[in-house]
Length: 454
Image 1: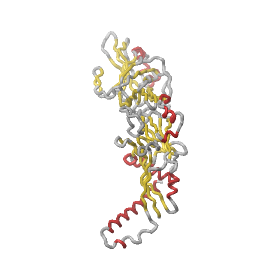
Image 2: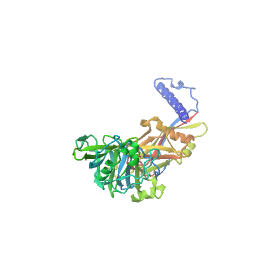
Image 3: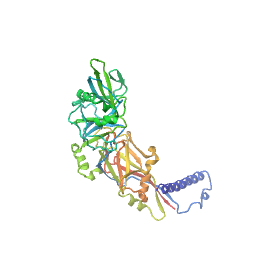
Image 4: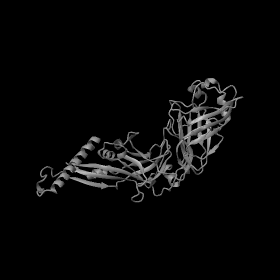
């Protein structure tokens, strides 16, 4: 497909260059009528045209499956979206020994236990107070297993955090913890001393190897209580071992000198995010489209959400018929440029905290199942696009080769899936205008094309 497209473009470019040279020469010569005579067939003609009125069919759909294991950023928190309802993000993780053969002494006294997490960003309203719960896992996490946003694990009944409340402070720098000054903002969750005592008094054999410890202590589930309004999803760096850790502070009697032992999360450990959505708490129009399946509503307004949430399906129902009507024997339709323009919906409530995503992702839905990157993606991000423009309040993709492939019948695609880029490890949401939204504020695809006769 790409080679055919390039062949057509080369023909177009060569003809245009020749035409420009003829014009330039003719502007300097008194014998213009003789220049170029006989070099081009009378049947060779090029026309440049534009359209942005071709039909798009769009609707929002839920994302069934999102792989959420071992991500570089993990999410935690609860957020009530005024349009899309409630979302909770939980973290499930194993813990790793910072050193083997740890010995807490014959008579250790636990001073405190703290789960410390290194902030890596946030989305939403951080002024909302959140209540965190921490539970010990009953299930063993399996390294070879796949974990998704819906994966369930069994936990023990005691809340080790005792419903600890906090307001996120992800922008704080130079956090002072004891004698340490941390360069990163942190969330410090105090856990029960009895939990620390059980670790400190366990058989020394469990500290012999990381696997021995994981077989004894299966890990933690960290969750936040669902908020009733506002709220935020916080981002954390799980494997920042100098900051993210479980800290057990203790001393050995009769000494009062405090010591500390750390448990880390490493890339060798199993950890994943669990995302829970209650869309029944969303707006009525949102519910009708996303839950009740009223696809026609997507022609006016569409929804995108990260965390295994929502994406949009886009198809081009009249593209081939339009192209066929422009072509006859010996005429080629060349797509010079095709852009998919995705604007924010004018009906979306303005919010300083529910900001647009940094970028979107676009994949082709294969007729045989599965998905694939568009051929235009291979041209690089500066050409392909996908980033949000704050000045234009839209996102634009160049999909020229994809559209040409659909016309030529070389593209195995029944449409496109539009989603938020990095949706497994960020909490963005966005409301966008559909193809039937008000003029100049609607989703559309703009085509610049030429008709070449040989």
